[in-house]
Amino acid sequence: MPFLTREPDSTGSELRRGRSDSALGPVPVMFLNQSLIGRCANPDCRSSWLHLFRKRSAPVFEGGWTCSPECTETRMVKALHRELDDRTPAQQMHRHRIPLGLLMLEQGWISSGQLRDALQAQRASGSGRLGDHLIRQGSTDEGTVTRALGLQWSCPVLSAESHQPAALASMMPRLFVDAFGALPLRVAGGRLLYLGFEQCLDPVLAFSISRMTGLQVESGIVPSSLFVSARDRMLMQEFPPVQLAEAVSESAAAGLLARCVERLQPAASRLVRVHECVWLRMWCARQAEAIPRLTSVSDVICSLACF
Image (cartoon, rainbow, N blue to C red; front, top):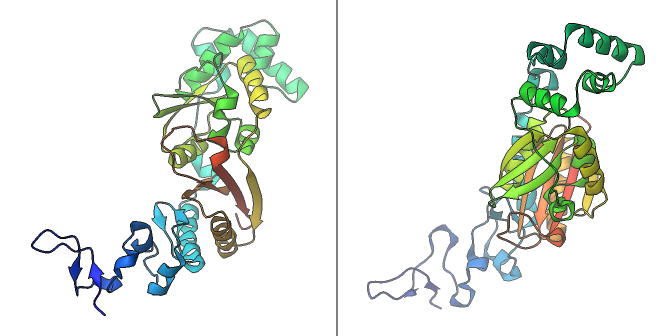
């Protein structure tokens, strides 16, 4: 029986009798559908045409459709190896910054006596941030400490006054707000996400969020009083569902994450590393909005015991 393919002939017809579609072989005309004849994104795929009869159009992982659970796991293994292969020990990522007290002294915002008194109070209490002790003893105010933190981290001072936590809760898992002290403040122009921190920036987290969302991330310091109230409001919101998991090895983590993708059959999904864990986000449907709908995303956060 002759087969038809999508290759045009000299008369302009989109179907031509008796030709094969490269390595995939001849395609029956009844299955000329892009969702069915798309190639598996696993370059090592050895599947036959029988997989097409399953009418499987999902899952899609990192922009590529996979034809079987085996191919999904193969792609997950490679993605996980990519994320874990370039990890850098925390001590190597540290950058020297001018101590806050010395910076404020250099700017003339406090005196040497005020700095000495704040350091003594900090040592005596055994806890507390230097800026808080300076404010408590009346040497400076919160605005000046916030400006100093901005200079220390070479970043802008951001405001949280118009923060809308319910609208931004889908940007990241609740765990990242709670554990890493990151606060999504607003999205500007559908391309720029402002991410607020209270005392110090987290460039690793910011980079991971940028990779996951496709947005440019601008990190900045938020005045402590505004940050605390905005964070508390944020933590009261509903966040996307999240599964927390731990794996003993990379292969075990790849299998676990691949099973999550296969179970949900997402229209899109992506994997990024965040410090000592990996974050898998799955979108149930494709969407054009910069801020995903709360009901359309699901997260998995997996840590490895071998980190």
